[in-house]
Length: 429
Image 1 (tube, rainbow, N blue to C red):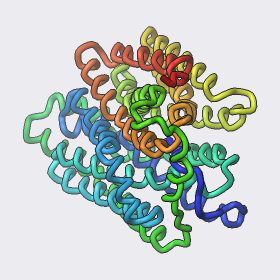
Image 2: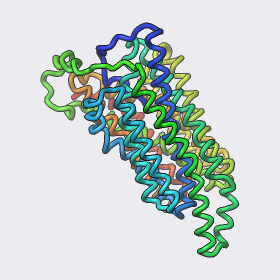
Image 3: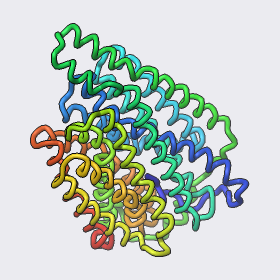
Image 4: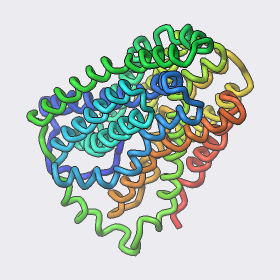
């Protein structure tokens, strides 16, 4: 996910490769961290479902606690950055994430689900600050005409990390989980408590390592030579546009874009965070299912590469969005109508459908906003909360219907995205 239009006219000129490489490597490492932390949720959902004895709805509070922080913290994050600047703001974001990871230790020691959720919310808060700083930063550290290429590279860093994270955490936390689930059914209360406490403790060492990495990276960025940027003067340049407008709510294509982004993020999180639990519900062992999120993210990486090659030379962004929505509908229907590995495969392939949506929706939504661009961008950041709400709805449907039939929620989501690509993004009055 990347904010491609928050800033347009940087006061810091970084146009030569020598000046660009250092900052790009630093920001690339941040996008790697984004992906690693974000996609750990796909393992935490089935892991905490066992360790804390949860139903489907309760287990998907993991995604809710994490992604709702974007809605709550989007505007406060902008204020933090105004006070600290971009570079120190990134360091602050990493520090807040470290605090969130630290909360996991007492949560695991006491096997308290509410503490786990608090830790996830604090991690999400740190990510909100970090993303609000780094997404616009990557767009302006070089020529505007190559910004899309830099954003795509950042996306690949994000998804490569996301591909690795579930495998690493899953190998530790879900080791022998299938055997344990069977044994728990026949255990007495005392023995079950001991086993579940041991399972909960598995998460402590990985999160200690995460804390150490986050703290080191925060210190490194704070003392790095990453150049600061000043964007306050941008408002003077764009104030001449849309002089007859008095509110951002007077742009229907933006409001529809916010809703579209909300739905898209929900669909992306569903495809990545539910697939491990869904595979298990299809009778596939967790020792195998723990790799399924990685498959989803590999599909997204393939989509990013296609986008780098094809857009805009061979394919317009609006057309790419239409095509992505159509294959999203088709793949969702196939996943619902088939079973086993075939069904899981088409949930994973939704990563391909989702890959081109963020870079397509964002520019369509902020087009022609003029002086309202920053406010519009903040609304779009808040729309990331779709990743909090839609998995909860899915979890409830999974309890009432089945994990497979609950994916029916994806069909109206992709149909609305198709509507926005074809009609909604063109509405101006």
